[in-house]
Amino acid sequence: MSGNIPEPAHSWLTDPGTPVFAVPPTLSEWEAQRRKIRDTLLELLGQLPPRPPAPQIEMIAREDRGDFVIERFRMDNGAGAMVPGIVLLPRGLRKPAPAILYCHWHGGDYPIGKEELFQSAHTPEPPGPALAQHGFVVLAIDAPCFGERANRGPGGAVEPGRQAEESTAKFNLWTGRTFWGMLLRDDLTALDYLASRPEVDPTRIGVTGISMGSTRTWWLMALDERLKAGVGVACLTRYQNLIAHDSLAEHSLGYYVPRMLTHFDTEAVVALIAPRAILFQTGDRDAGSPIDGVREVESLVRPLYRMYGRDEAFGNLIYPNVGHRYTAEMWTRTQAWLADHLGTASS
Image (spheres, rainbow, N blue to C red):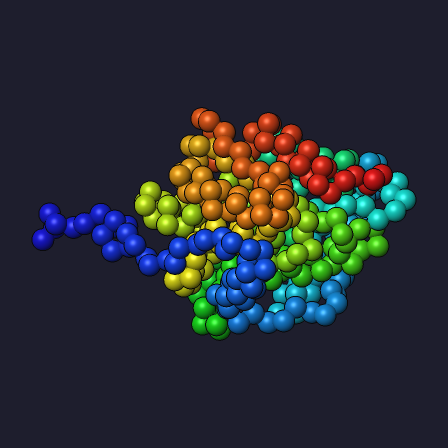
């Protein structure tokens, strides 16, 4: 019997029965389909508590860095947690400015979280100061189990890192929620706060990140129309392509939304972003982003952007001989894309 053990993915999950995604012939038909997809996504994310009608913020500290000011705060998420966050305010703002919701990555770096803003381990330079110096208001929060929220899962301090994340995911499933749904809910609550800031032009808010931050980027843009532009580096592919490449272990538990493939694959989520501006940047040697899946997402979504007359608003760049990392060229393109589609503080 041991000699007949089949290949895992190819034996019992070759065809999960996911309905084929197709762009309908008219935009009016698409808008009806689009509402159904978004409603289904929200259902799949679980029975999430409603977000607070107005963000409840506790200001912790304020620091002048010359070119920008740093504010550290805690945000009541209305679901039992005070979420630590950071806002960077460019110096000399005379009118509401464009803003960026920055989503940190995973990478097993549980102690870091939002402090990624000030590091160059994930991006070619610290992204927070760089974006602030370009005139963007920048906000980042700690995702559940990261940064100041590390070791604060159901087991407390005795469950570090991945154990806390897994226990949190298990607890959420028991309560009818999902880890991913609660993480995105915190991000959307942070977006509520960012949009309410007097320094921010709420019509010019973007979102960006690498790895888990990238996945947060395209899911958030799919769920909330207030996000007008985004850049995701890595972590774009179809879930069925991950299966085919035996790459399910490349992503954390939160990446997997229950019943997702019984309804649709990645392209349906990404399609909800149209016609707003989104740029994907992926290395062709990134094991967590099989390139055949990246290309298929583009082939299925780009026709929708063309229907809107916004072909140029969908960017999909694939970098040869690049793995799961953020290159200098990618970072330059990220900043240019956000400036092109959100403007600057002076515009």
